[in-house]
Length: 494
Image 1 (tube, rainbow, N blue to C red):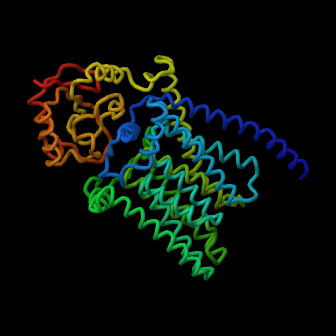
Image 2: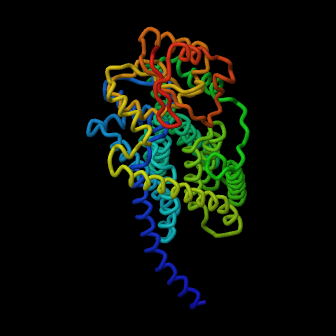
Image 3: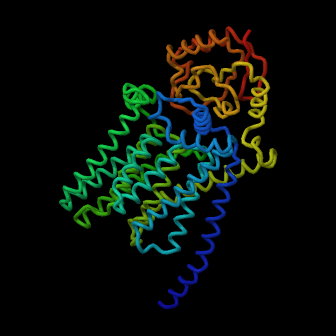
């Protein structure tokens, strides 16, 4: 027995510095991804919106519950320091580091006796997962950061501060903040009922209701109260189809690992029930809250399969795993298996991004240019050389706003078309296409830049809906003058 203890001690002494070095290596990898290729939709939306806010505009007001007003304003503040796109990528990198830092704080708060080895293992796993997303300025990271921070603050008894952070999470990404607030509220209700602390429950409920009312008033004032209904009920119902097929596994897509999400959700529910009945009481406050939060996020992944949603699913699973795996029993080990598989995939995605980024850096060096494909660099140069001309950025068979919005970032003047204010899927409607045609006619827009590639969005294209007003107008009034690689077609007014 002493011999085994000695071996374990020696192994710990070896693993501790190895994990520390690996943590710094992952941070360095995340920093290198600041120079990643900039062909990501969410990044373009965030960057352009921040730039427009810095210029005194209020973009996407009709869709602030779908987009990310808090992130827009945060980025616009940093653009006052530097208007380089790379500045926003540095902010995104810092947000990811802070998210991991707060997650570790949360784990240590829930597990008082966590060892240094386990803490460093958790750090490595969380860094691996969060940087496997690349640098994309996904708003969900900021919202999850605020949710984790709200939980840490709540558990330390700072109720009002925690509520305020929950509200900020809602303003950053509505569904994420809402799922967390509901999860925390249900957990408080369960604890109050089991411990009969009804006065505490009423106090918490009043504070949360006041803050939520303030958020609704703020949103309604800026957006119009009718838009709250549009964004919460009408928009998801009509833009995102209610029925979805679970995607079959494909090694290059996060959303295709839906089966592992289902398995993990089932294991988590079983673990929570086991904890509940074993203790004949509410069980772990953390376990109840984060089981509900995870189930909400899993639902979000299934109604809107996306890269960022899947990354956050794995991130939450890692946090939950390190918080509940204490006794190392068979049930704990079974719960770990899908998490380990998802971690392997995260590692694959991280090295995939790193490989492509290193290739780009070798070609372009450490400059703003390295953030784009060669064809997109040529487009940006063309735009800068024709700043006095008017441009329309669209897609073949206008099924969504699928152009690279980062190109807008390099356009010094405001793009004069309504298309920039739309959310994916809306261009398939007759009224929107007619609106854009009227703008093209009125403004005599000289250039139309179309993206030719196909996307995996669930929205139907104009070919499917047979609403081709915009496509027919462009074909009849514009002629092709240049191709930028295989993906982009430039057309000029006849």
